[in-house]
Amino acid sequence: MRVSYSPGYYASIPNEHIFPIKKFQGLHAYLLEREILQKSEIIEPKMVDFINLMTAHTQRYSYGVWNGSLDKKEIRRMGLPWTKSLAIRSRLAVQGTLNAGIMALQDGIAGNMAGGTHHAMPDWGEGFCVYNDVAVAIKVLQQSMWINKALVIDCDVHQGNGTAEIFKNDDDVYTYSIHGEKNYPFKKPPSSLDVGLPDKTADKEYHRNLIESLDTVFREFKPDLVFYLGGIDPLETDHFGRLSLSLKGLRERDRIVIEMVSKKEIPMVLLLSGGYAPTLEETVIALAQMFEVAKELGY
Image (cartoon, rainbow, N blue to C red):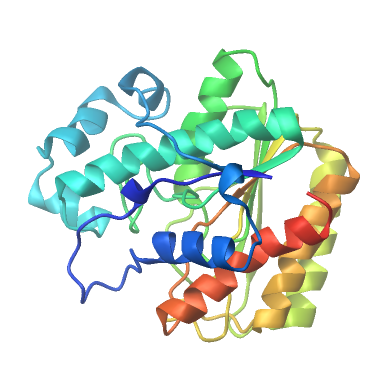
């Protein structure tokens, strides 16, 4: 299973910031040390071209992030302090997802040790999301005739508002989001299917809702490619999550999604999305489960 990763996924932000920027290099080291992935399976992306970036984002915003010309209000809304390294990592991560899409079409499954930045809108970033990597990847793959239809399975605890907004008029892209109903974002543009869960939803009820709703999705839509956003913030220990999944329950969530897509023989991209566990170690262990499950299923 080929997976995108670059040392440039790390960006310089203050140590006290809640965003776990060290999770990318931590996950990379964990997957290699435990031989979940081999070095030969790690593919390093270059930065995405602006022509591709602007399939989902405005020219003003695309270059504004790169040039550091966003105003203070825009940077505050993005939630991350602007640095050149942040601009670089954002472009690298988008290309990592685009590369993973192509690799998944070739191999059946692929991943990116970043991505899933689903809050980014065409003309602004928010919720720690700079560029919407999934939206860019889908649009480029559609324009390049690699795919016609794409499905986004977003299991981050926060609704994928940016992805929903970008594809609201595109019948060839199905956006699915299972999330905390009372959690951020408080204004939720409708996805193709939204499954809003009450606070404290635990393993059994979460899995039931997931299976039933995904059955509905696959009855309604036949994608050429699936993007799976495996955010770890449904964990009970998450700083912002408000749901109550156990670590074992999160692993079962990953297994349900990956196995369901695999049985339908649809190529699939694995993406990190969000997660704010109490420690970096807990964050990395939870993120690694998605890749472990894929390997256990024979990829």
